[in-house]
Length: 333
Length: 206
Ligand SMILES: Cc1cc2nc3c(=O)[nH]c(=O)nc-3n(C[C@H](O)[C@H](O)[C@H](O)COP(=O)(O)OP(=O)(O)OC[C@H]3O[C@@H](n4cnc5c(N)ncnc54)[C@H](O)[C@@H]3O)c2cc1C
Ligand code: SF4
Ligand code: FES
Ligand code: FES
Image (tube, rainbow over all chains, first blue to last red; front, top):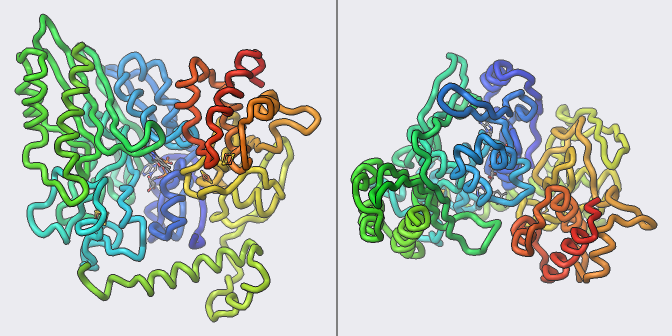
């Protein structure tokens, strides 16, 4: 690992000031992603700002729902009564991720920002637009390589070799997308609130950029609005082993059914795109329909419409649809 | 694969090697035969301005030393505190062999920097039990064949001791799920689950 300077931030404002001061400066929270990437030489910051002791770990009630501080540990989030009672989908997604040890270390902010697990991104001897940036004209190693874990949706329509077909690996982010979370951030110009759908981005012409957060901005918290009608929810994660593995495909589903008809539905997919995949138009179309396999199948078809399979991941197109139907049947039962 | 200028297996690989050898030289782990490589120009670490005094509390003992921010808790404990019970299986958060408790909660010591753990209470396998007074789970591992080669065992024990305290012992399946952050290459899993269940039944979660 390259040597670097290390400082601790004791106040959020101080952290924002410190990150603006250095050239190649990064925040470190739980360290479970950043330290790993630094070991491989993928991230090489000159300075690390330790934000792990900032008083931003609270989980509290707000007028409309709950607010979770950016430094809340994933394990604390998953077992907090406000989360398990009002947002069981989030708790379930968190517990489906990583391992107990990692969840004890990983923070909300770090999870939002975690980078892809694409093998070519992780191997600095391989060409990768995400790691090297578009001006390097490196290309994408996964395109003609082993692309089993890669995206099938939200892909650039132009030359894919100038873009990126990686997926966002987080389980939590899929649940947050389904729940319409709002990410609160603080920067030199003050605070702003970013709806989760605008927080993560599709790769497009800027494959190096996973999110719309500026490098000098600090995530301080997220807000979640308590749903009018909770209904039932489920996070279904399909992976190569039963636990401690990233998702091949995952589904975050929440459904309200009355007299056999769908009143409200939320549906987000993980493992299929550069960001959690959600189409509110598909959800709208489900409202009023009978809560039957036929309706679910039609929604699944629409949600993956236009999907593109590569050499090793074409199976995901069928798998995603089956997973959507299974998740919806589980919550409709 | 596109542009040759950027597809530098050799160049990138070599940079990586030099970086690694610098890091290794720092830990004094290189066997004597390998030392000539450190004579390569440019690989001798410069006197560092990043090293800093740190204080760590491990197994109720206080250690004061100078550390580089890049030293992981695992490396620092193994290489400099003579606490070699925590194992380096993967060094990337993927195996659990390095599991310790930080303020009573299980964590991987390979993915955290030692400088970040000042002021916290760290417990390693050396602090779990003693040879004359084993932790109940250590005794149960012996009784139920919870290990074969033993490499993963310190991590399994630290994870298992935490799991007992957390109370994730409702069923064998629950134990397996909550022990999934610890991989055993020898496949001692049935013995590990049996050992945890036996301590739970004995009602001495330690
Ligand atoms: C073996 C392994 C298996 C895993 N399996 C899963 C899995 O199945 N599912 C899953 O979802 N995840 C999984 N993870 C990933 C894990 O969830 C992430 O590593 C973790 O959430 C990152 O959080 P952290 O606090 O440790 O982040 P750090 O490593 O500290 O930081 C990550 C990034 O976020 C930035 N950052 C952190 N906090 C802030 C903030 N407040 N404001 C702005 N930027 C910030 C940092 O600068 C850094 O760039 C796995 C990880 C490992 C190592
Ligand atoms: S998929 Fe993205 S991260 Fe992976 S090699 Fe291609 S550009 Fe890099
Ligand atoms: S050595 Fe830390 S998890 Fe493998
Ligand atoms: S006992 Fe050998 S790896 Fe677990």
